[in-house]
Amino acid sequence: MAPMAVNLILGWWLVAASRAQQLPRPSLSLHPSQGVSLGGTVTLRCHLPQPAAWVWLYQEGGWSYNKGKEKEQDVAEFSFVSTQREHAGRYRCQYRVSESAEMSVKSDPVELVLTDLRYPPSRISLHPEQHVGTGTNVTIRCWNKDYGATFFLHKDGSSDPLQRQDSSGGGTATFTLFGVTPADSGTYRCSYHPKNYSFLSSPLGDSMTLEVTPTPARPGAELVSRGNLVVAVVRGCAAVLIFALGVFFVIDAHSLWIRRDESLGGEGI
Image (cartoon, rainbow, N blue to C red; front, side):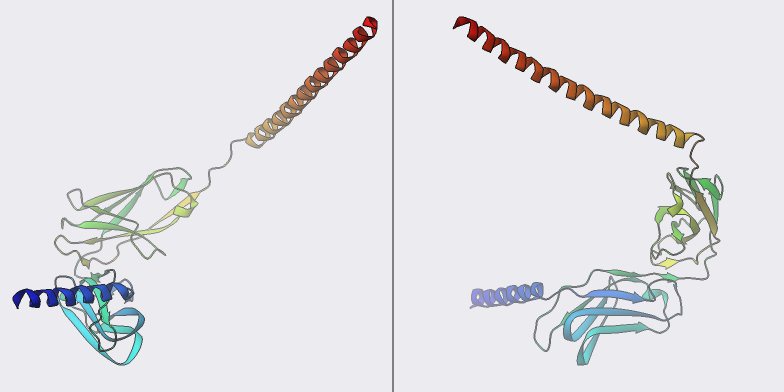
């Protein structure tokens, strides 16, 4: 009987796993998506590809939450009205269809990073200067008190940090923008995550504005470009003329051979 029970359990598990793979994956989003401070309110929305009866929210290495839906809908919301340190972390969601045993796979993770205002903002500097020409390498230096932190470089208007870097010691990180273009113009700031607190962040620090101007063309460059175009056209015309003359001489030589053959043939008669 034991082997039969094991086979039944294994068969049920395989069927459940197969069904789970058949259900579309949900997605999870944060609102607001960034800039949530400790004590603030944040909502995690699990977007369901089809109406579901039950939805679960999982915190990696931490809590789990479930929500039954009185009326099946395509989204489930989980809100933290007054966030605490323990709410920071990585989350996924999962759903179940109707009252059956069918479970979806978990969503891709999202990270809830909370800003702790007790950490002082970092400072920032630009080198060589705030106004540079296209193609210049710009170094952005961020620093604070030595927290053994991981620094993040932000640009106003971008939702995600541009770069991250562990401090090189002394609470300092150096970011380099290689060969900047006008698209790199903008306002930059830094933040950091204190050591051992991956999902806690300092506030955004002081800002520095970078202005990248297009490198002006060298004097006479336009005349040189036009001269090169004229030379190219002349060379092309000369090549066509030489080719046409070659074809003419070949045809003319061929005609001479034909006339000579005809003349010799006439003399033989």
